[in-house]
Length: 216
Image (cartoon, rainbow, N blue to C red; front, side, top):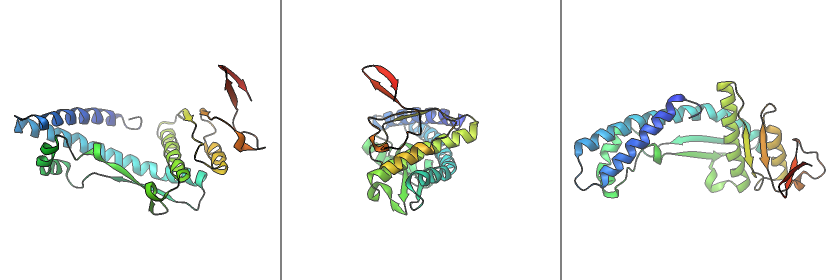
């Protein structure tokens, strides 16, 4: 929604059509013409959402890979692909699954059922990646969004980061801090900084205790 002005409208229109279509699917005396009208609306806005999401992911992919290399090391390669719930023309797929949708009382196909396939060194990240690798992937995706928004708009976003260090080893923690844009405002919370050992904190640090904020 921040990246493309038409996405928010398409998402709102899709959700509205989905809500109404699901209501009609549950109705015993459903109007087939009305159901088809909302199926067409769902397909129209859903196709736009899928196209915009796929386009955005193509733009994000190199930023994600770079952020991951900076934090996780060059020996690990992350890739992300958009996975539609079903391939083919969305209107045709919705019509083909109409009986199933009526049986379940819900629309079983569309962007609300789509997902991302994330792989690490060619293997499914959700199944084979460690907690630290999964956390690094999630962080890399956020940093990629920041990098792309800066590239597209010329304005650096503010980073609000809440205790992301839990599953990261000290090397990745420091690499993450160093990978934050130098010209960005970043506010990070953590329960301790013992993992820095004797190294200086790369960012200004403060302690919040008993409602008082003081520099470390």
